[in-house]
Image (cartoon, rainbow, N blue to C red; front, side, top):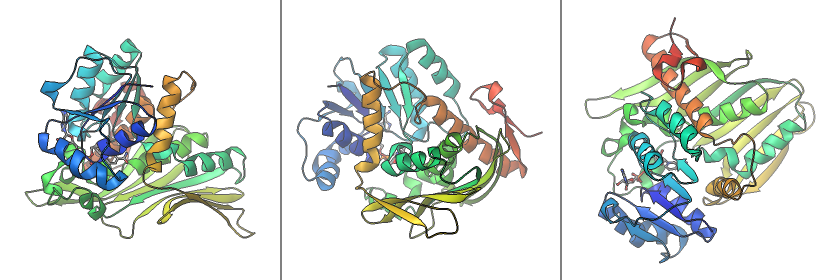
Length: 367
Ligand SMILES: NC(=O)c1ccc[n+]([C@@H]2O[C@H](COP(=O)([O-])OP(=O)(O)OC[C@H]3O[C@@H](n4cnc5c(N)ncnc54)[C@H](O)[C@@H]3O)[C@@H](O)[C@H]2O)c1
C-alpha cells in the first residue's frame, strides 16, 4: 500500500485518484481552489465513477498534513508544474513523482533543474504520457518485436481532436480563454495539449531502434485575437539521429477525433488506434498482400490510466528495472520537440536538437 498525494483536483486529478484508489492506496487531493475540492466530491468523482469515495481526503495547501508520501502526482496546469516539482523534490522527496504532460511550458524554464534534483534525490520522476502504457501500445510493441513488418521505413502519429470534449469535461470553463489551454506559452494549444502524438511517435521510434528526434520542421495555425494565443493546428516533419523520417499531426479542431500511429515497414505495416469505437482501442497490421488483421482491445476511460498506475506500482515494488517509457527523460525529450516546434514555426526553417546542451532552449539550434 502506498500513500499518495495529488496536486490538482481537476480532470486528471480525479482520473488518477480513481486509479490509485482502485489499487487500495490512500489518496489525499490538494487544490488551491476550495470550489475545485467541492466539485471533486460532489460532481466529478461521483459522476465518473458512480459514487464519492470517502477514503479520499481533500485539503487546500494551508491544511496539508505533515506526512511522508510514496507517490506524489502533479495534476495542475503545465505552467505550475516546474515550481511544484522543485519544491517537492527540495523539501520531502517521495519515492515516485508523476508530473502531468506537458511537463512544462515551451520556454523549458526549470526543466534542467528537475533533472539535477532527480539525480540528487533518487526519486523516480515520471511524466504522464499514459498512452505508452495502454494495452494496445503493449500489443503493438510485441508485433514490432516479433519483426512482423520488417524494417521500419517511416512513422506517422496523429492526435487530432476537437477540444469540445475537454470543455465538456470542464463545464465550469466557458472556453480556452479561461485556462492555460488558450495560451501556447503556458503549455496549451494543440502543441502542448496533444503532445501525446509527439511522445508516442518518439516511443515507437525508440522501439524501432531509430533513436531520438534531431530535426523538426513545423507549421502551425495560430489563433491570436488579443484574448487567446494558441495553435489550433500543429504539423511537424521530423528526423531522428539514425536518419529515420516521419510526421506528426496534432490539432484541436478535428471531429470525430483521430488518435493513431502508422508504421510502414519493408514487409508490411502496423497501425495503433485509440477509440476505434466507443469501447475499443485496436491494432491493425498486415504484410500488404494478404488481408489485414485487426485486434480489438476493449477499454474504458479508466483503462487509459491503468497501465500507467500499474507501471508506477511495479517501480515502487522494486519489480521494474530498465528504461521506463514514462521516464523524466522521455517527457523532456518531448518538451524539446514542443520547444523546437515553436522555434521552427517562428523562424520558418528546420531546427536541430542538440541533446548535449541540456534541457534548455540552447539545445534548439537554428543554424
Ligand atoms: N494524461 C492525460 O490524458 C491528461 C488528461 C487530462 C489532463 N492532463 C494534464 O493534466 C494537467 C491538468 O489538466 P486538468 O484538465 O486536470 O486541469 P483542471 O483545470 O481540470 O485542474 C487543475 C486544477 O489544479 C489546481 N491548481 C492549480 N495550481 C495548483 C497548485 N499550485 N496547487 C494545487 N492545485 C493547483 C486548479 O485549481 C485546478 O482545480 C494538464 O497538464 C493537462 O495537460 C492529462
